[in-house]
View (spheres, rainbow, N blue to C red):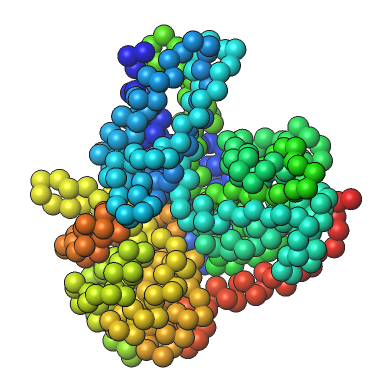
Length: 507
Ligand code: SF4
């Protein structure tokens, strides 16, 4: 099997950089459906450009290259130990070449292993089958959407929907609630894999396994097919839209599986995936390990996704250059589109924790603090960011009020929005929250003209504090210094629609 490792490397690179055909079709339909001039339409335009740029440069679609899960079927007698060893080597190679971000962190020490290897990473599941070929499927699922997974133990009371019973209608309510609670934080439009039943562990695993189904297949169980169809239609009336900006497309896929359960338990498990739905597969020759064919790909090469170049400008964009003054920031309001120029500083979970106990290693007065864990390559002694989209901001909610107050940050940028405590700090100290387009890692990497330096690199590449210079970096003001939050507004409006879906639909 001389070619096995090379085939796995190709599978990893293609999965990280080139979306499968079914997801492309779903995103194409979303682009058709969403009004181009609203904020969801603008975000989708950036996403479409990003998808094309990732293919052209063979760069990561999203800087969070995710948690790799391999599902492998082998003929009886194939050497699984040798295969696993070569899979680990291919993962380390892909990480060294910047196709995967170092994403495996010791949960006790917080140290990043640097090569995506460690206990639990990657996940490699083998199964034997009767075929003479080897089938390898790979899912790369990022942290922002993983954090939106949810498990219900029914019967239970659900906000806005009332009681969910141990019936198909109770399951319907759980799924609707799962989509609603994710809002834009999992980089909607998203897809959900569902498991009805199982124990808690098997339920989550089977829910994730549904994400290996093609988005446009039809469930062979007629009851589940009806449920999937209903969820797709109902979810897309919620008005959550791309990145939770409000819009017509909230869900691009719903796949439901079922397992038996214990008499005393009834779990509904939900695996949420984002629009950057990275899943591919290959069929390999058992003798050589060479790729015989790709799975989840149409015969003809993928067409370009973008309808227009870059961010659709209206002429009403506000130019912002750091350091920002309080006056300039207080003049911004929710809905404004800004184009950032000049310097920014990245900082996410570890930096926020660090700032609770130390001074900042670089001045943050008037700064734009970007929640971002980039992919960075060092070439000829210089750093280059090859993927640099925003991370989920709500994780910094316990810290951000203090950071704004103590360090004088004027703009916090990330995705998915933040909570009431940060909103109060924006108002009190004069700052704004900017929502960048989640997953648009290639698009934003091209807006970074220089990496000026790095602090706290011992926290690991994604967690370090990078100082960067940007040009025409677009983002939308979604929380302002006047107490307004687009995220709170969309959540409230979608809750009213959700409540109207409480009436039973299935027996
Ligand atoms: S698109 Fe968003 S949710 Fe998906 S992996 Fe990237 S940052 Fe995470």
